[in-house]
Length: 262
Image (cartoon, rainbow, N blue to C red):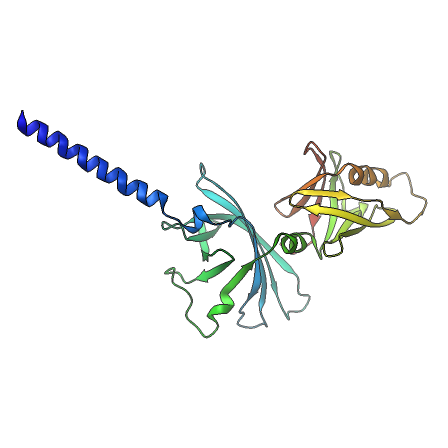
């Protein structure tokens, strides 16, 4: 009986000790649980045969159930003929210590990045910092809200691909372009050009009074639908490099595609 009591007490102490260690590990401050990391990062990475690679990485919220998050990456090889942004998307996962992320493309880890409060630092395959004379160049800095909005929305042209539930063909030519610094938008309704002020913040977007040319429009024009969408827009979001305009109830009004290389 005495042996049984001692054994039971020993097991209870062991279990308590394990719980304490587990609680300590879970309560440690890591990049994953203590930093506001779900945002955009931008910088110019070294390139072997060009002046540099203009790079922007956008990290989205982590799905705990699926055990991964999603990322989007834009890369522009500077100094190349017809230089344009290449786009990439995939998933990411946190390393065991909760301080670095692994970007996963087509099932393979493409890059590992240490997550800091204001930046991402590219790591070698062994998860150590890259030790070269250009080590500092392997860092992408976190963008402010205004910088992020500018980086996401400009200087690109967004072409309407879907409007009020109808898919458009490429002949519509309706588009929008944004200047976040000046808080203005310009575009083409498929018939007339327009320009005007905007109010934009995280996930909110409103178009002010628009000035337009006065060309007579053919029956095939989608101008009335475009103007209706702009009048009703209250929110926006990005879905796999598509800009989605939403109404005040966050219902989809239109989708616009980004013209970059696959």
